[in-house]
Image (cartoon, rainbow, N blue to C red; front, side, top):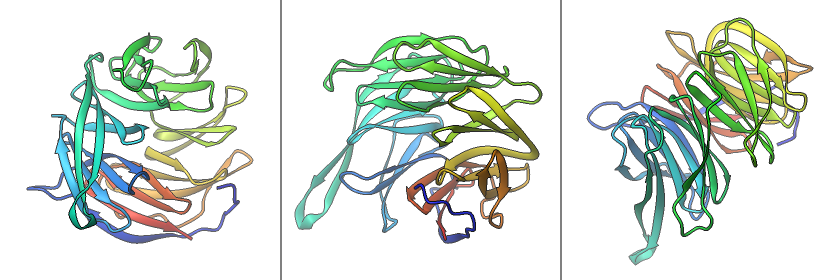
Length: 321
């Protein structure tokens, strides 16, 4: 993934719809490699749909949340966690059993339900097999831990430095994670082990963050409503602000210089590939307008293959050439 590739094309491979009695918006996605290649989609109605890959067939679905699933995180082999607008986190084991004629029987089991947050749970990041961190619109960040794989997760610590809804958190190296919220113009850097604030960056002007993405080991991108923010990870400094009229809801790194982002300008969704060099950004391929509503998730399958997911109930496979 360190190949420098500036001249690229974004090609639509296939487009699918999640259809029930009506189209249901996709809020998040997850790609699992072991023991089988599976794609999971979290929907606005609280349902998870599981598809096989590379043959895109719906295998099964289940609904354990009664409101939107905002994030799905893989914690361990066959173990996922879900963050929902119903204020809960659920730890779920995905079970795969071989039956007759080499067919696979897919089941799931709820291992634990966590009720600690008092508002929407926005995101979960895994630190290791026994620890994860959650953030919420209740203004808090919570650290969950367990001593061994057989135990339930216990609340280890609550960070309450934000006075606005915490929309995103991101692990940036083995010792640090970063958080950002609406209603305040501060980016916080925390120590993963002791949870102390290492530093913070104060932002002037319009700052309404929606997504955080580490482009490379030195650069963090925060996408917001009408702007981009480049952050120096090592120095904990704001490098530059790029302002425009688009809202960046999802960003995913391709390599150390390229990243793909999903935008919404109020009337249509647009996918860009941007090239970062010497702290300057340039669009490097034609803009794709194949989703009708907000792009909620961009999922990487392998080096140059991605999936974009939307509130219009569609997911699209893209290949970068």
